[in-house]
Image: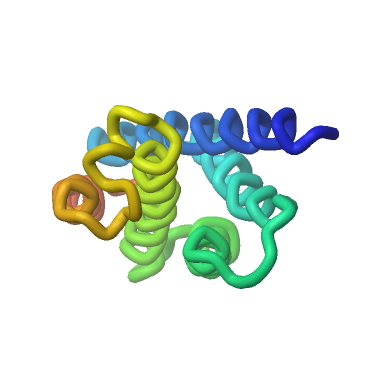
Length: 158
C-alpha cells in the first residue's frame, strides 16, 4: 500500500473515531445507552493510534508520543467498561478516559490541520505560534467542560 493510500485510510479511521466519539459523548450527556456506538468509537480510536506507528517515520515524534498516551488511556477505558462494568468509581474513570481519548484524537487533527492546510499553516507554520496555542487551548477548555458534564450526567442503566 502506498504512503498516500495508507495516509488516507489512517485519516478516515481518525475521522470515524472523532465522529463516533462525539456521538458517544452526546449519548453520555443524555445518559442514553452507548453500547454499539461505544464499541465503534473505541475500536476506531485504537486503530487511529496503532496505524500511526506504521508510517515511515524516523525517531520519536509528538504524534507517536500522543499515540502512546492515547493507547494507555484507552487501555484504562477498556478495563473500566468491560472489566469493571462501570461499577462504582469506574463509571467516572470510563467517562474521563473516553473523553480524554477523543480529545487527543481531536488534538492531533488540529495539529495536522495547521500542518497540512495552507490557510492555517500561514498562521502557525511551526505549530508553536499563538494561533495554534489559542486553538488548542480553546479546544482543551471545551473538552474539560464536556468531560465534567458527561461525568455528572452519565448514569448507565444496569
